[in-house]
Length: 490
Image (cartoon, helix red, strand yellow):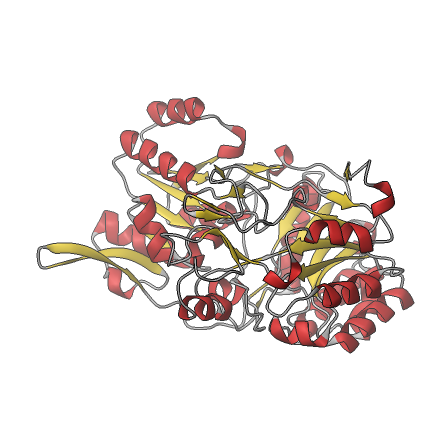
């Protein structure tokens, strides 16, 4: 038997679909070969030719993101393009189409129905795939008892309903993963700025925090599972043998389990990996210990990306952050003390945001040696505290703080963003006026006027989707340089 494993999200720059290594490894263990196709490198004609030339027994599709989560005039939403891919696959493959990935796991029942795929695996359910295949091809087991499975259940002649099974019981240790099914060399471009193009390794899975807008706990679980230092390093060694020496550790937050993070860095330091590798990761100001800060420069760390969120304690509480301004100050102090490189982000425009609270955040970070990404607007996802709050508050179109598809989108599948109406239409001009250093603060989408005009089913945006994702960092310049407006980041 042979399966096609497809990364279905056209992303710029292309980023290696590490999830397909996990899937290919599970398939190999039960005797199934696999081929990998990344739609970022293929046009439709090439995919069609591949499907015509091969008789695949099944197809696994991974969806990494539902969008860029960066508010802009033209919203990014890949599902229409992915639906067309699924329809094309069905034309040439009679076997099951199984969907998974982080993006899929945000709304697994709804997305399975939208795409018309046969089955789904939500969350980190790679160990459930072999059970599903045994059921499909050997008639063994019961789909109702396969953890993580999303499937259609017929109901006495009526339209089938889509069900989602519970996740597997919690286990503290993550299993080892065999790497090498994905051709990482085609993605690898050494360089500090493009960390999506580094070799990617997961050292832990899960997020114990309660940020009101975040889908990570829903996707990966609230209890943190940890991969042993030996198993992580085994993956590192595979990349090193391929000549790949730069890594991005893909944990939700590297220090979500600070004890495990420290143990891994101690393991690397004792074995001299600081002389072999360079790496980046995400971290939180919460639990950013001095022991961790001291180990980072001794382990090959290039930098830490920290979602500060805000600096106002009121706004941090509104965002559901588990830390305060003093925790951010302590993390920055430790960074300065131990010579760490931080890249940070601010999430502006949330509930009760005003121009004064924005100024407070900008003024705090001015003078701090740290580049800051400014995200204006919060994507309202279902299955989050913020999403539930928005849905219970009434009609989307009647909420003046909401932009994006606000009509015929009550389940929040398609992009909806919250931007406090207190900020005004010219909020990007205001940011440009108050930012003193044009080389410190940048956005991931071109600034524009935030207008409340309804266009079809959309508010404040052009009613057209970009189905291919791209992030282009652009500095926000001060008012005196408005003739230069924005400087594209190289």
